[in-house]
Image 1 (cartoon, rainbow, N blue to C red):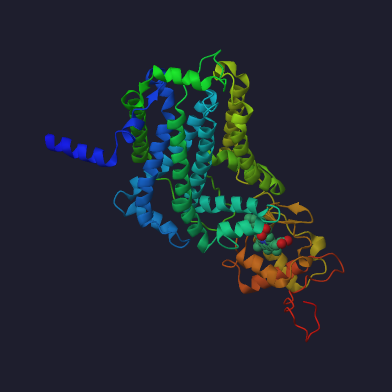
Image 2 (cartoon, rainbow, N blue to C red):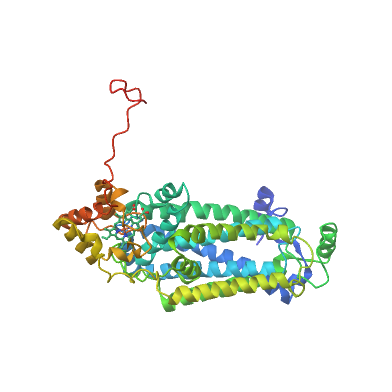
Amino acid sequence: MSIIKSIIGWIDNRMQLSDSVVSVARHPIPAEVAQKKGWWYVFGSVTMTFFMLQVVTGICLAMVYEPTADAAYSSLQTLNYQTPFGWLIRAIHYYAATGMVVMIVVHMTQVFLMGAYKYPREVTWFFGVGLLGLTLALAFSGQVLRFDSSSYWGVGVLASAAGRAPAVGPEVVHTVLGGQYIGESTVGRFFAVHVFILPALLVTLLAGHLYMVIKRGISEPPKPEQPVDPATYDEQYEELLKKGVPFFPHAIYRDGIACAIAVIVVVALAVIFGPKGPDAFPDPTIIGADPRPDWYFLPMFALAALCPPSLEFAFIIVAPVIAIGVLLAVPFLSGSGERSASRRPVAVMFVTVTYIVFAVLGWYGATSPWSPQMDAWSGDPVPVEMVKHSSPLELQGAVTFQLQACRNCHALDGVGGKRGPDLTYVGSRKNRPELIRQVVQGGGYMPAYGQQLSAAEIDALVAFLAARRPAGEPEAKLPVAPPIKGDSIKGRAP
Ligand code: HEC
């Protein structure tokens, strides 16, 4: 016994734990939080527990997972069917991710409705908003790593939206995808983001969040008619803490119980339902795929399906940025005053409306066809007017165009899908090499057709496309090599 005591004494003496870790663990909290109302305060701990579970299971998965377009899919199959307990680890990783998203939203809702973000805890809230963004980014990038048909098209939707960003769009897409189109480097990019960048950022913000929670204390349960006044609040809170109780052990056991239940639920779900996917093999030529993101992204997915391509950038990229901005602005808009939800009708309405909008969009995303334009036009033949004076090769191209259902995404003469540009006059915008490249490699949001068309078919298709120009206008020119600087022999200006 005395040996243990002297070991503990030695460690404490050298590391000075009693006035750091121990005193932090025993920091006083409002007495009420150590009573029944304390159950409202466990959601943050549960979110963090899920994150720790993600780190542990994620490391296990990373040992088997291969982040390349070729091998990702089969390495998931290996995990599901060969690696001992691989299926279980994958399933836990999936359900804990879902749990993390759910619990962080529950936690924020509770903090918002209880006015806990108000003075002096605004910075705690800012860190929390950052953590929400990172959690969603982790969830999305994780889904991409499950490199199946849903994840393939998920990246496609995102890339096509980002590609429409003014000026920088193409560069952003190039960086995200690691090239012109979803390919070899895409999975590697998302892997690096998912396992290094986002977790590192998350741990950093989490440290800030916890520092603030301890430094500024947790809020006392709100009461009506007790508004927060920055001039007097600190004093009142200090008074409150004088009658407070230490966090350890009076409050921490609630967190412990909640976290234990949460872990048990996740493991039970994992055992009962098993790992998620991978669903169909990612095949860019299956444009009739019926991909769905994981359910908490369905509202976003519905937005993507509902809005016309010209608004995709606004809805998919700008809207989330605005949403984060609104959340960050909350403490500035109502950083003091009443905290009790019963005295804050606007706040309650805000939460209600947000939840209803997300529920409706989510329902729409779960039930509606992915992209209403996808199948609508495939039966339409090429307009007769367009092929009246065509050469045999161009006619053959028109047939290929029809058979490949290019009009699912492209309009001719204004009629057809709107996913890609109208091709009526594409011949005067794009020269033949560019047309070949587009058809063979796809790019942006267009599938690559190189694998499924013969050279002769591509030839015909390109002849058909090159002939799409206003009467009398010449074909788009081949690129000319740019003049070499200081090349005076040819007399060109630099
Ligand atoms: C899944 C939808 C989809 C299908 C199917 C599709 N495309 Fe596309 N296509 C697009 C998108 C989106 C773009 C714009 C790509 C970009 O922004 O880089 C595009 C671009 C093009 C362009 C360049 C147009 C321009 O003005 O720059 C050509 C040419 C083209 N597609 C031809 C075809 C042909 C031929 C077929 C059938 C074999 C086809 N597409 C099938 C979505 C599609």
